[in-house]
Image (cartoon, rainbow, N blue to C red):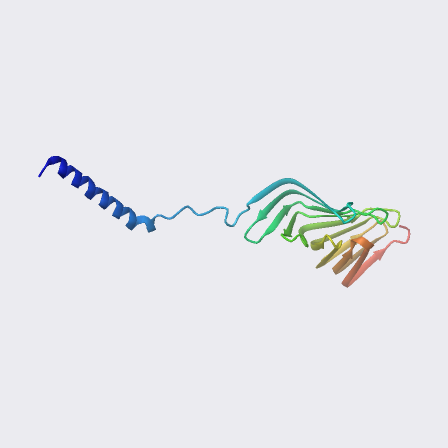
Length: 187
């Protein structure tokens, strides 16, 4: 047998063996898991969103230190969000918390962890400060609700309740149950 013919046959045999080994072991090689499958696919710092109404005026304002989109749940996680309603003569409401979640449709904002609600003093009312642990806000409707304990303070009173519905557009609060209060007639 010719030496070059033997070398060629050896190279072909080794190639067939190497290919066979690779095909057999292909299933044993696992691809690196996608680290973003459960994590965010979008990250924004210093988010500042202003939503206008049909008249072109700013209807509400949502800010956050950070915003991340979580594709698995199609939600946006917010760190230190601030939600503001913008009304002229009826006053302005501002809601802050440590954390928030906005579902992709944008219809609801769930605020949690030290929620602070403030109605700024205006010509039609005094300043109110409200605290609770979580609040579900519907920005387009300018309403909010919670089933948790609520404390409402002003310079003239302190009221506690379990559960509350808020209508920011009409400056109305509905306290659901176990309402207790202390009023100062001099305030």
